[in-house]
Length: 236
Image 1 (cartoon, one colour):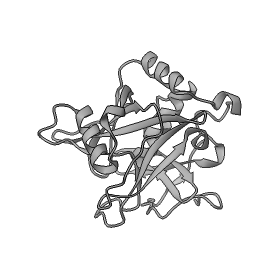
Image 2 (cartoon, rainbow, N blue to C red; image 1 turned 90 degrees about the vertical axis):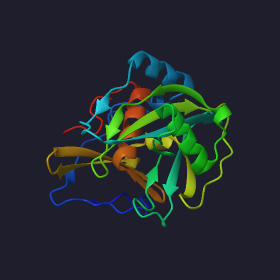
Image 3 (cartoon, helix red, strand yellow; image 1 turned 90 degrees about the horizontal axis):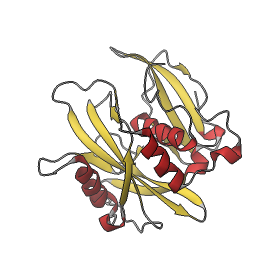
């Protein structure tokens, strides 16, 4: 299962034996005109959706972490900020993720964790951020960490600087690109103790977004387009 010609990146995909192709994206049946999203529309959809839930069971003592999903409009396009992790990192080198990290004992809440970590990783100005909602928290299989995604917006494209020890590069990706049919890919993996799981991939030019980040992006885009967001990372 290879990405389309010209897409995909250096990320190492630990694909298990027995992995199979999955299905189309939730928005597959939408015309291109129905895939045009706005910050206002996303904020309204998050508000109407109600409280975020949790995907996956969190064992006792599971680590808590938080990530920041930063959105902004530029020239009529909604963009999201992603990071490519440094190749010097011991774990998940080259992987694309949202800025964020584990909760420190001194963090008053998980929103503070997400903002603090994003400030450390990409030097974002916290005063630019306006929190508009949350996605479902997601229990990662590999690290057994419960990740809490917070969605925030800025009034303009933020001026960001990568912390070289943690971040190789900062990616500004238009949601319109993520919603293209050729960018989406899904695989169904057999995972010990969990059964068959749908794994989401977004094949960008030069990068592959997958795993927990891919699942969270899938839910964000499903919410933005008013399509099915209920099977995030769930059993196939």
